[in-house]
Image (tube, rainbow over all chains, first blue to last red):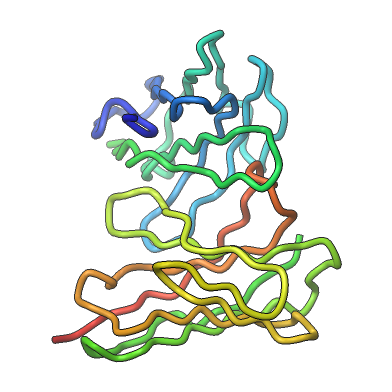
Amino acid sequence: DAGVTQSPTHLIKTRGQQVTLRCSPKSGHDTVSWYQQALGQGPQFIFQYYEEEERQRGNFPDRFSGHQFPNYSSELNVNALLLGDSALYLCASSWTGLNTEAFFGQGTRLTVV
Amino acid sequence: LAKTTQPISMDSYEGQEVNITCSHNNIATNDYITWYQQFPSQGPRFIIQGYKTKVTNEVASLFIPADRKSSTLSLPRVSLSDTAVYYCLVGKAGNTGKLIFGQGTTLQVKP
């Protein structure tokens, strides 16, 4: 079991550009959540996808969007990048059943210059 | 969702027991307490979850008093590899959606 895998591991983009980050959930998981973690801070919830639809959303602008595919993998898209979008982006997968824990990937380090 | 308060940082030495306390005064009746561990440049990892009294697994123990307004994560005989950030979260069991992380407690274990 490969666990949660994210790609790429590191990325450098220029202000105003767009970026796509990818996540493959742990085998057997059907729900994917995305988090942004700035340096020295705890992860902040962006949104969650289940059955290919956004189920919950945190306090992030519409520049942040996502998608979930039939195989449960997911993408996070960020448009019009700002310097403040530089962070570690974490993907977490889980199963919708009760009493389950979220498994996190190692993250994608995004640097906006 | 209940807010949590933890110490920003703690220091310890190898072989000692470490206790990290979390305050959650507004915890709801159906909320559980969950602790995560995070190493640099890695995602958080689930450590332990509990509702009341004491929970123990192979990694840690979680002590929750009767009023549930606080909880203590206990790490027995820490090693250098336990140096990490520890997060206390409060929410419904199985609520793996909007996890609310605070700043966490940075534990530094010294030789």
